[in-house]
Amino acid sequence: MTIGLAGLGNMGLHFAARLLAAGQGLVVYDVDEGRLSQVAALGGRASASLQDLASQAETIFLSLPMPGIVKQAAIGKGNIIAGTAVRTLVDLSTTGPAVTKDIAALLAERNIAFVSAPVSGGTQAAEKGTLAIMAAGNAAAYREIEPVLRHLGKNIFYLGADPSLGQTMKILNNTLYAASMVASAEALVYGVKAGLNPQMMLDVINVSSGRSYATMERIPQSVLDRSFPVRFTTELLLKDVKMCIEDAERIGAPMAICPSVRQFLAFAISQGDGAKDNAQIIRHFEAWAGVQFGAAPSAE
Image (cartoon, rainbow, N blue to C red; front, side, top):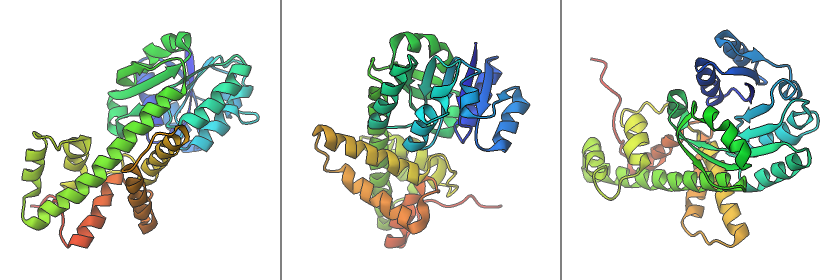
């Protein structure tokens, strides 16, 4: 089966490479011609537009950055919904429950099956094929595309027929991560200011009750050595937190802590951190405390 993939960004390029390495027939689309050329060099076939993509493959995967872009790509005039071949659409993006419901309704009118399958784990997991995938939507379509998802992720969950449930799971997961990252940054800077060794703090926390993905993975990998590789930008993290809080408010689920996290991320973006990795938010706490957590490796 030849499948289509729209979106060759930091995640999408890894998806394309993994699918092609697995022998999957693949046709792709992206607004960046350089990205199209990269995938073509790996054996993929470029399409001229989203409609063209959806006229060459029955199953289309989306990997796009923002809900509005996903909605326009999926159901905008002359885009995927207008394709002559498409029968199933799979959204790997973090699109949020509200937009996902809008997309699902219009696709149903065209008899196009829809599976929302947001992913978690960042670019490293995308490259290695170890992502967590939170799928929901048409059950028959999910069973059909599950073997393809197995090339992309290690932990795959089917959450039910309502496609918005995968998105709900993803944004609450990312909001929990954001809260733990902000709290960890604040606490670890306090520890440095009080005289504790950064590595020792992580060693203790990560075998104790304060551990989290932030302390076990992100901070050791990017903050301790001051490398700060861009794996998930602050602006994208804020987007997910905002969607989570807004949807919680819509259904009447109270949130008291997460709005503070949203406010801090918005502050960080106002200071120029939008396109930087979210781990860089620790620099604000460091500046206020007059200390630094970790150090770059010695050149010697």
